[in-house]
Image (cartoon, helix red, strand yellow):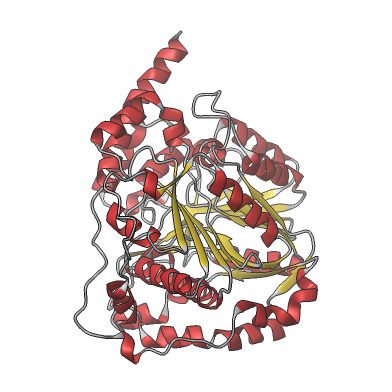
Length: 517
């Protein structure tokens, strides 16, 4: 009886907090920017071939192997997406938790529209909770005959008023919290990019104040079929709702969308620097170099794991696990020597701490890099970590907290931003990766927290390669060095490095149960 009362109390508290967050997320973004200048007249679009032509030399490898290339730099992750979009021949399938209408988001949208104008079929699924585009913008995009847009689990944002949100919170609390955190970008069913990055300035080193240290992986060949199959499950799921079914004022049947202002925005050199555009055209040369240097690894047994839409049966209050959780626990328990982890959020349960302690006790060294209070942009998640930090340390794991002015940011920030800004922005950790026994690498969307374990759908790629594991681990360990991170101990942590107002903000968030953080 007492347990049920506490559940109701927590539900009300979290509902109020979530309601405030949803109101904050509902600020109307700007519409497609207008321009009185014809910037596109000076831009030459690349027309040299389509994707199948560039892949012709590796078709035999693609039959039973997967080409793997880790995208460490934000700029290369952005350029890869742009080039693939520009050279797609048949289909582009996009799935993201966040797709912003900031500078990067508008340029990415322009590339998708231009692909659609070449008769490429474009399908987009975006989670509802952080959707920042206006209904009018979404309708305009979806009005193109080759573009389809679906919103995942639209219970709180797109097409909803404050009354609708309140009803969702009070009547469908578990489903409201089940978000789609998957991030996949698939071209022609043969090449895919997945990992931690959403579509927004801060994931590619282009935000002026705050950016993320993140990691993606580019995949070619066999495993892409599994990624495409997962995308199809989400696309066909009843949780993914076509934008046309969420709006009250529908566009006329004969409405013809006008993307002229969007094209002009992307052509404007103030928004899309010409030197960066030039790098996209030069990408085939970079790809050739990558192949010659054997940085693109052709591997068998690369595995893709994704939760199913809805995650679980919801028969347990804010719990239930999922395929990604089961796989990660299995991989963790298989470790014999060492595990290195990067996770922006580190919120552990007694069950997880028991597993980690048992691993340490049998001689497995576990090193974890997470955000410090100074580098995080998520006070709710840090509050959950802060509550159990000492208990986690008692298991014997080594914990490092990322510095906001980590020296590594000079390496991962875009060259353009280096030149534009007098002062480098703060960097937070957003990479979600793990290396086990110097052989198995995991790159994906999974945060080390209850939300990823039980609520959000997540996806991850498991890569069996000593070479790739060595390279990723080397970078992880570098980011744990004193110039990039603080080593946390039983008697010291770097919380005092921030202003008292931020420290107080974390304490106030202790009213939120860890199960929804």
